[in-house]
Length: 348
Ligand code: NAD
Image (tube, rainbow, N blue to C red; front, side, top):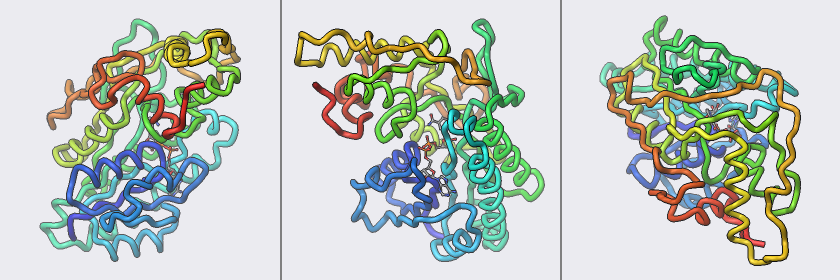
């Protein structure tokens, strides 16, 4: 075993941010296994295209032969499992792929990893970790006055996406309790930041607004989500990987709850300020309320991860958001918008 980690889904939104951060902040190698579905994009990884510490493999986590050969060939000390079907709306329209990748794929990966881990020498076996990246959507819905989700909140998944992630969480947990596989699970809230596929709220709104297209807002727009800057999420994952207690679950939230309509209007206002043509009206005029999705939660928030768990994971993103200006990693709102749009010019 060497200082290599195997990342699944490392060409997607969070996975690619994690891989870029990992290469920048550590000396270790990354093997990046990604099927390059519609959500995966090699361009997200352009900055490390020629870096010998990054090995990209196009392939499926369900392909046991491939996964076994990668484990044998690269001898990773940890698996960071990001690969998933991740969009709630798609899971409502077509749940099959969610069952296949999120449940069957995670099961297949666990089987291969267990075989690899079983055969490791005792020291390597003790140091090995399987970190499973999951979502706070497994906890379901909160009313306006309910306390935040904690790691002890009962699972109540409401969409096929959430149910498939909940199933994968249970499988991961079972491989710890049944076989002793040293797992860690993280459940995070909504991420935002560079390289997000523009089917998700923030990049969708930015790109539609730039093109003068309608800005769809579900229901009355009063649904609340907690927002977590993706680089803060990646930092928390690295911390859980190094210091998390085996078999434990860690919620990762941003303590940055916003009504959807407030997110959309904030983006409109920022784009209004940046616009060079004063004759055009406000981007707010593009907002359109559309019928909410079935199973949709009204309010969703994550507890501060530090509160319940002893590994010292802290809630790092308190002041990091695109709609306030004291941003630690992004130098300004304009920088955020540019990066959220994949570097394109957002001014019109
Ligand atoms: P994403 O959809 O942007 O990326 C998923 C990646 O997985 C893509 O690169 C895709 O090509 C790859 N992939 C899909 N099926 C695969 C398969 N069978 N084999 C190999 N690769 C495959 O997702 P994301 O937003 O980066 O989310 C990453 C993880 O974080 C997911 O597990 C998701 O459930 C979880 N999560 C995301 C958010 C969020 O706000 N984006 C919030 C909570 C949890």
